[in-house]
Length: 124
Image (cartoon, rainbow, N blue to C red):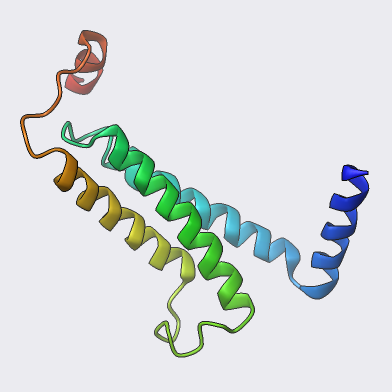
């Protein structure tokens, strides 16, 4: 029953959007960039990034990208975003700001001690 329900939902989405493949591609790469890029690019190179900052950044990136993409498809963002602004770019910026803000808020002291194997990888 669940498979039939998912198939019907997918058929309805494909019917309502004429460019479903483009939507899925945009959403997939936008989600990858918004959710993982800040945590991977900054988190693996800066010792002060905490696990809670990375988790918050990933969560904000996913939720913001999903919400902004769906809202932009339904024209709910008319007048909210600048002309030509991509929802994924706005979600990426929100994710970076979240990573930096939560890192600043939770990591006020000295950076946490890392395992020796992680320290060796970071030194490479």
